[in-house]
Length: 540
Image (cartoon, rainbow, N blue to C red; front, top):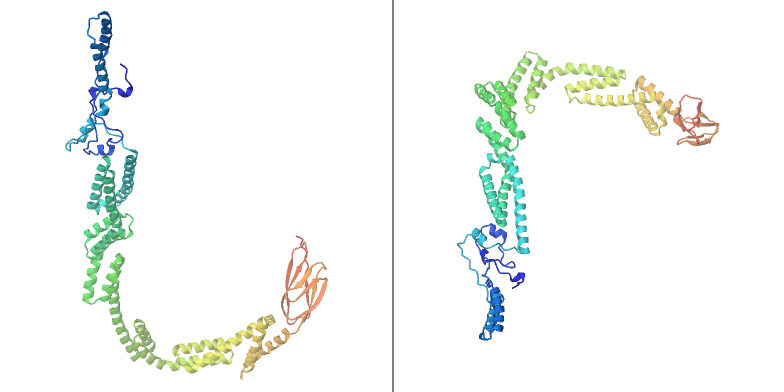
C-alpha cells in the first residue's frame, strides 16, 4: 500500500522523542552552559505497520474461491472490509486525535545526557540576536582589559601591585569560563570588574612614583642606602627614564663621601673653626646639590657668624691704623667693614672722622684744578675736577653749584662748536631758533672769556649769512622734466636761474623712456654762485 512522505512512520530503532522546531528548541548557549532543562516533548504514536499484502491476496483468492464455491458463508467479505477501514483509521487518524503526553523534567538529569536523548531545538531569530549582542558586549569589555593588562605589565605591576593584579587575572579567568559556556552577561561583568581594578592601578602610578621618590630622598637624608636604592629602583621599574630616580641613584654613589663631610663639618663647628666647617658643608653640597634645602640655610648661618667676626676684626684694625696716622689704611679697613655690614653706622662714622682730616688737602687740590680750567674755558676739565671733589664729600654745597655752572658752560661750548663745524644746519628753522637762543644766553654772561666771545661772533655771522639767498643756475637738455622737491617745478628747461638760501638741496629729473635721475647739491654760506646740471641720459 502506497504512503505520502509525511505519513512515513518513525524508525523504531531511533526512539520516538523529538523537539518541536517552533517552540521547544534548546538554545545553544544554554545547552553548552550545562543548564539542565527539558523542553516540551511528547511521545508520538507511531503508525502500526500492518502488512495487508497477504490479506489482500487472501481476499482476492477468497473472492475467487467464493465464486467457485458457493458453499462459504456470506459474512466473511464484509468483516474483512471493516478490519481494513479500522486499520487505516488507527494509522492516520489516531495520532491527530490523541494529545501528546507532557514531558516532565528531572532536575537531577545531566544536560549532556539530555542532549544525547533529545536533539537541541533551533533558537529563534530574536534569541540569536540577543545572544550575539551579549557576546559582542563581552568582547568589547575584554579588549580594553587586554590593553590595560599590557600597560600594567609594561609598568612592572608585579613589583608594586601584585595582589590587585592577581585579582585582575582571577576575574579575567572567570570571564573566560563564562564566555566559554556562553554566559556572556556574566563574562562582561567579570571583565568590567577587572577593568575597574586595572584603571585604579593605572591611576595610582603617578602617586606611587611620588611616594617612592619621597621615600628614597628621605632614606638618603637618613643615610639609609638600602631603602633608598629599593625606592629608586621601583620608580625606574615603572618609568625607566625618570630623571629624579636616576638623580637619586647618582646621589647614592656619593652618599659615603657626603656623610664623611657632614661629620667633619659638625666637628669643626664645635671647635670654633667656622670657615673650615663651612668649607666641608660646601664640599658636601657640591657632591649632592639636592641637599641644598638643608645645607644652604646652615651655610648661611655660618656665613653670618663669620661675617660678624670679620667685621669686628676690621673695625679694630681701622682704629689702630687711624691712631698710627695711616689714614688711608684706616679708611680701607672701615670701608671693608661697611661692605660686610652695610646697615651698620659705625664704619661710616669712622670713615667720616678720617676724611675730615684729609678733606682740606684733597679739596684744595680739586678746587685749584677746577679754577684753572674755568679760567682757560676748559669746561670739560672743570666738570671733572668738581665731580672728583664731590666724590670725597657729596655735601659740599659750593662744589655742587660750581659743578652745575660748569656743566651749563660745557653744554653751550659743545653746541657752539657743532654749529661752527656745520653751519648749513642753520637752514633748519628749528636749529636756527635754538642758535638764536644760544647767542642770547652767551651775551648775557657777564664774563664770557675770549673763547666764548669768538664763538658767539662767528655764530652771529653764520646766522646772518644763512638768511641771505645765493644765485643758483640749473642746466638741462630741454627734454627732461626738472624739479626741486619742496622748492619748485621747473619743467623742461635748458637753463634756469633762481636764488636759494644756504643749505642742502636736491634736483630731480624725469623723462619718458629714460631712467630718472636725482642730484644733491649744496649752497654754501660763502658762495657767490652755484651751477647744477641735471638731465636723463640713460634709456630704459
